[in-house]
Image (cartoon, rainbow, N blue to C red; front, side, top):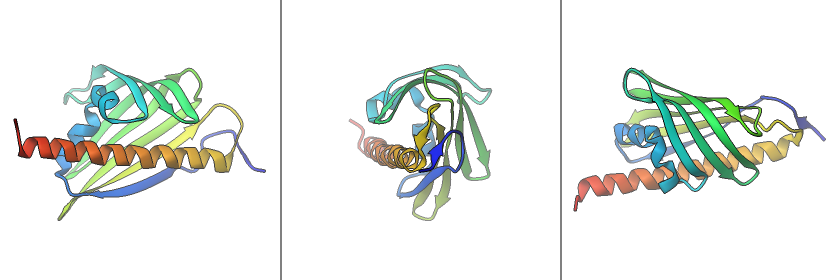
Length: 161
């Protein structure tokens, strides 16, 4: 049976959102709000911002089934024309050996597409199929949570109290 001992293929999924790409980007970079709206992050703290005011260094406590850890992440926000990407790499963790991920936000006529890419090395030998299933679950749940939060923010903006 094949075992994963290092970084390999990544897992990704794309979701179409009927939301302004700027709202999606603002939601993704609002890292300290993650515990309020994502089911997989129980604590988040931003330690540094880049020159544009985007997060560049943060710590998150993740509880996503098989993937449980305290993660120190380095963030990079890149804009290419109307597209944006928020990428992160692992700086330190208690268990995981490496982690890379990103949200890529691409405008469309109806809103935008959001692609979440994730690659995790759990630091222990694990059956490749099990690692991929765990990654796919993390990606799917994260996109579901993001879509709900973006919709909530759109509704709140459209109907302020």
